[in-house]
Image (cartoon, rainbow, N blue to C red; front, top):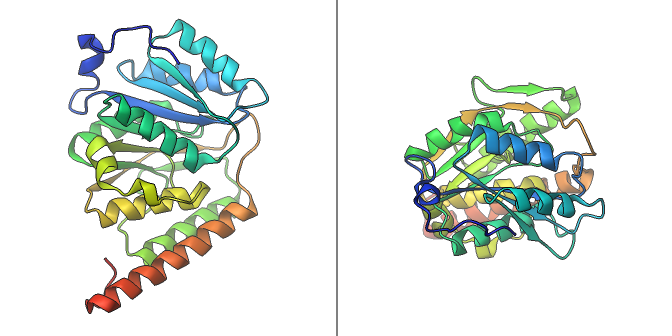
Length: 264
């Protein structure tokens, strides 16, 4: 973890205009081929932000590469975790790291390059007037590149099911390219989060919606990774479907008990 510069330095306090100090959290596990490129692109596109690589003790040396990046750039930090605990746990640890150090906004970004850092300025601009910004693959103006038809259909159908089942006005509830303002993180009951993968992103969307947060979607260009292997598998998809159904039943039961006739 790099702490080479003074956190009271006014250039660091200023952060992104209208948003404040921003931390981009990039979880990694065996991303040695990608981590240098993605961190470098973030720093070039948005020089005012800082980066936290949250590495789950990658056996391929990703953490060592991240340490080298942090040693030469005071705006890059590394959180070394004990082992592979999943995407959701890594993001929650990153959120807590950011809150403890007084950041005003936190960005979720994949390490594999599927989330283009070139889209980050647009997401941060939208965050000036929103609590949560989702870089959406399924809103007008978005593009999905090099995905097979099966993945396209799975994502489309999964997001439609989440939207209808949970009553959320969100087109891409499973999207993992996001900006959370500090107030949104404080308002959401993050201690209750227990899911991973796709369902982790859906769960945070649900919590933000239930907390009355203003959620805005910004179109992005989403591309399949070029290096390494995807962490997606049938168990992650099954977990997402099971949890969405469970939450929908819980929400409807809660609404029925209150006699409102609709989910909160």
